[in-house]
Image (cartoon, rainbow, N blue to C red; front, top):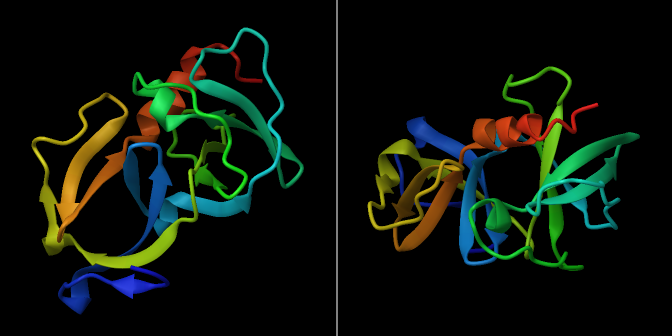
Length: 161
């Protein structure tokens, strides 16, 4: 797939989403969750942060914590991919002092429109407190991240300003 594509669905229940590549998975994120797919740039390290937190990313005159999805799920901390993007995600309401978090991508995200009826749970897919659900859409295996859990993990570090 490339560009803004539509997977088979009833047009009434289509949801605009982004397919976000990370190492070993593709995240399925509703477009309304994403504040911006920002260009990759260096990240400022944060002392005493957990291994899954890469640091803080400067975005629109603010510093946004960067959570490496692969690492928080028990994988390795991956280096930033210069061809990737920074997925800046909107706050879900865990803490008003945390307006955004960011996830580095391992490539260029793709826009898609997916019908709710086309999403099938993948019971053999990734399981983690940071995964809402592993799904299949057509032949593609995707992961819906639990953004609230990612935010809470950062709040629990005690690093929130």
